[in-house]
Image 1: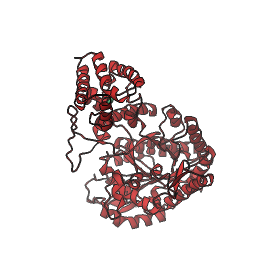
Image 2 (image 1 turned 120 degrees about the vertical axis):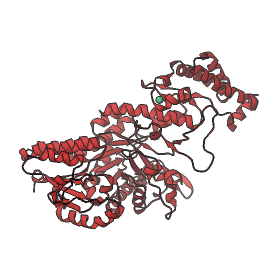
Image 3 (image 1 turned 30 degrees about the vertical axis):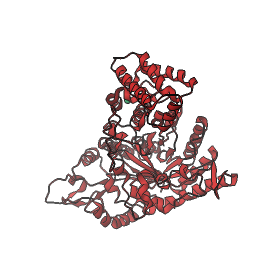
Image 4 (image 1 turned 135 degrees about the vertical axis):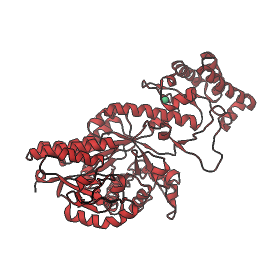
Length: 584
Ligand SMILES: [Zn+2]
């Protein structure tokens, strides 16, 4: 059967709202949630109806024309277990691969668990995600396009239009993920006295997305199994197979619409001869962590390796081996994810040239991947990254002209401001980076990003109990008592300056007298100029983010992680707003 003669299929979850009736009604009449009202309104009077199947908590997978009586059954874990075998049989018999041109799935997360992942990851399957208003508009669009295509069934251009339209709505380009590095805060930190509210025991963790409440500062979080390797953070408990793993969503206090991507953190084991995990372990861990998207295991093909206690550069043959190993692991990972995974598998590609990345992308997609990720881009220059991304995209468009728009590409660890418009144009689906967060406390003059896009230096007021600082002060003939006094003066004058009770010169003198003890003489004047610029412009005053509004001048003081990370979250928010403008 040719592609244009194939049917489209909609699989939709049943609705809790049902009409009260004593006689069985066809499902589209019986269910009365907003999605069903849209279907009735849009498809009435069209004559023939599209192929629609209902995913029902009581009846499993059934055709929409089945007449049913009202029922009250929830799709919970137990029900999913009971329904899975018959749903699998139903799909095997009535939806073999290639039978439908496109399958749109309109269902909540719980319902999706009732469908086998081998089905969800098929090339023709599209899952509608996002807030309810958006999901309903996708459904409306689907009905309209179906009716139009019905009127002109021989128009392949229109059929193509339906594809790209659904893709455009469901997959906005450049989704931004931030890597999780245990970046949480003390919600009750006392900035005046620099005291934690944590007194040992369980810490109350406050993540950036909680600080910003309903405003979003990223689309999702990238959690790394590298943390297991280094026995750190979220996945630390995964070290013991018998330990109960806390799902990432719960651990990170994530909102529903924020996504979780999992990766193996290849950078953390780049010096090992082989990756420290097996494919089976990773698929199980991702499933236990409840990630939405899981990256296959990769091995970085550059840098050094440790062998017999010695560090040496990788040989050329080892570089080629690592690229091959990454491709082999991706293939095994896809098979294992389809068998037992509960996430969208993402195939990671490592390569040496644009051509190599493109060829590997082609083979990954032929094997069945719909989401691929380009790794190893971090040390590359902007134009190299652009050439690789474009090379991969044009190969996909050439080899898979029909399904190219459904293939998603992720760029690992890459945030290049200048490249974003080009990456948007070629349809890069997602990227991750923590650079705007981390810039807040890197030694540079770019610590605070103003809402006008200008970078400012943060003002350093180190803790006087820092041993290295104390040593320097003693060598300069400054007593510990005096050092403490200088520290308190800096903080007091900065706060007075923010309330307009203090002139700029006094503040700069105090900072120089204190922080100058830690610096080379040549750096002192340079920093004084930068601080002057920051304090004169007062960029935090024009920012409406919750960090700047609550912290005032504290946000530009370079001092301890509760200030520094909050400043980093402010930067991330400013960046995310710029990104959202670009995505429009
Ligand atoms: Zn701010």
